[in-house]
Amino acid sequence: MLELKLDRVSKHYKQKIVADRLEFTFQKGIYGLLGENGAGKTTLLRMIVGVLKPTAGEILCNQREIGKLGGAYRMKLGYLPQKFGYYPNFTVWRYLEYLTELKAVPLETAGDRMEKLLEQTGLLHVKTEKIKTLSGGMVRRLGIAQALLNDPEILILDEPTAGLDPKERIRFRNLLGSLGRDRIVLLSSHIVSDIEFIADEILIMKSGKFIETGNQEKMLKTVEGKVWECLEMPENLEGLNRKFPVSSMKNLKNGKVEVRIVSEIRPSEHAVQAAPNLEDVYLYQTGGRKG
Ligand SMILES: Nc1ncnc2c1ncn2[C@@H]1O[C@H](COP(=O)(O)OP(=O)(O)O)[C@@H](O)[C@H]1O
Ligand SMILES: [Mg+2]
Image (cartoon, rainbow, N blue to C red; front, side, top):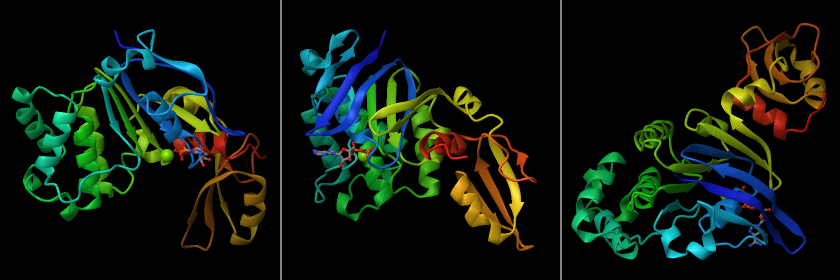
């Protein structure tokens, strides 16, 4: 059994509340933590990995408070921080070797493990290169490889897809898929499309609170019947934008604009209902419910 539980977890910086009595129980699976910059994602993830202490509340792993578990808990963890630090003059291989020693991964198996991870992350061909010569995407992938060194039961990835190009995003998605669902994977992002095809469950965070949690199907239900599409003349856009959360706009050749709106009421007389996607949910939950 594996369970990670947030029990009314709060974090305050002076007057500012960055995490507000968060409650959630993670079991094996892939979770996406979605929220705008400043929502409190990094703060929460840093509390989960134990580098920050909650101001109030507890984080429990299999019913025991993580601070009390100490090293035993850290052995279960893999973590990719948002600001991922490395030694630019180390080679890829030397860097992993070094971390292997820090993480006390048994040396007999370490070489094979490193080899396999570099293959999975598509870095085997650069294993003797210095890190400073790698592209941004490669450095991110190296960050993911290091988080997996100890084959963690709990994998925490803070904005793992930041700075990846579309091809690399797909590779990353496949990599996470290939890890199996035998662990807790929690990844954060402010980009809906980076989460929507990866995560089994989604937590939408705003101002230190979870404003919606659940699987995609459940989330899509929350905006069912509230997503509209209409063709508008450019001069009507400003008014619509003021009144309704607009989730996308596309200029058409005929001079009109195709507008997608999330609203409880029909936003304009020629609006027709459209099938919701996660972007609509996110907008509806975070964009203020105008209209
Ligand atoms: N050490 C700190 N002291 C004061 N405020 C902080 C500190 N760390 C983060 N914050 C604030 O907490 C809020 C949430 O930050 P963060 O957890 O980094 O959000 P996210 O990762 O979702 O962008 C932000 O408003 C940020 O300025
Ligand atoms: Mg962050």
